[in-house]
Amino acid sequence: RFIGVITEHFAGAFPLWLSPVQVKVLTVTDRADAYAAELAKTLDELGFRVETDVRNEKIGKKIREATLEKDPYMLVVGDRDVENKTVSVRTRGGEDLGAMSLEAFAVKLREEVDSKVIL
Figure 1: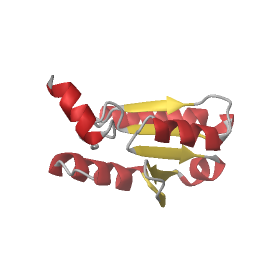
Figure 2 (figure 1 turned 180 degrees about the vertical axis):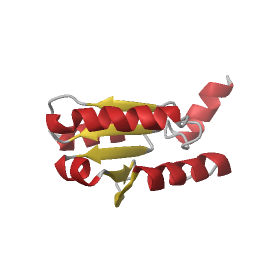
Figure 3 (figure 1 turned 60 degrees about the horizontal axis):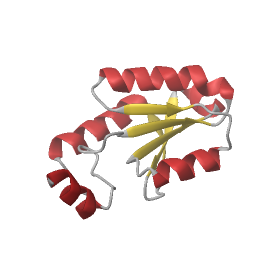
Figure 4 (figure 1 turned 120 degrees about the horizontal axis):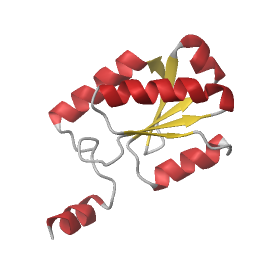
């Protein structure tokens, strides 16, 4: 009963600390697949719930699907990100947080999870 009430309350858009998938890693090209797997493994080892989407689809479709699934954060990874060892961060609300290092993103996630912020 509680799960039904909380799902209805958040309309399925759970806060980061409660979301079943906290971060979805999306690749722009297949050249970024290995880097995406590396990012997902690192975030998983840090205790975050991560999925990757390395399908051969347009990035717009991947972003739209992740938004509809109400995943709190999307990491869009392309050739430039692989080169610079960065991640391009988007929120489920469509806000583009720009490129940052994985370490900076992990710190942001940890602070949000630890503070139990409800956005």
